Image 1 (cartoon, rainbow, N blue to C red):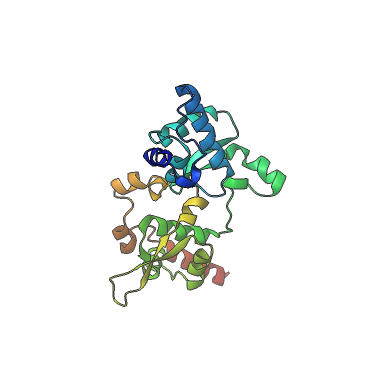
Image 2: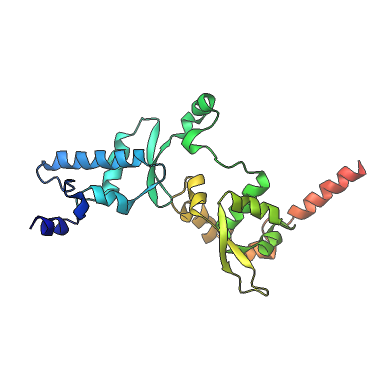
Length: 234
């Protein structure tokens, strides 16, 4: 009978002593305990904690999003927050304290960049993020110069990009897409959290067609060649 009751509550057989529902508590105390469980679990995790994981430690009808909202409200004024990242939740220090953390440890802590990227790396990475899946040839068309295999290798080595589906273009080259590690690295929940993505897309200022037609930053390679020419003449 006890086993049947556990199944009705959605409680695994191995967790017979763990009370998810907390029916013996009044509603306010029950909600408070669920908040504490969720915050403690996220605090103890080294990676973002998914909703289905959190759902295993609270009542069956409990809203994870409402719990998180209440936790975040209590964290107002604290130097850290609970944020949605890569499809889950994690604690992150607030940007205002990055300098203090950097002074103490030589890094900006959980908000600091774990990967040392050059400006070229970042530009290519952002291009992949906005227009994935995209091939190396398409990236080269955008920048007006060849995007090297070494640069792609750097981003792959950092696990920020991975191979996507093969392109339907001649030769069927591999495309590139961003990864969960990319979302973690830049503190994004989904790709839709990229800065102004929808606004730029809706305004027609950001599109793969314009990128490949050279309508975006058309003078990039010419400017670089001009600067190189000036340097040679000097």
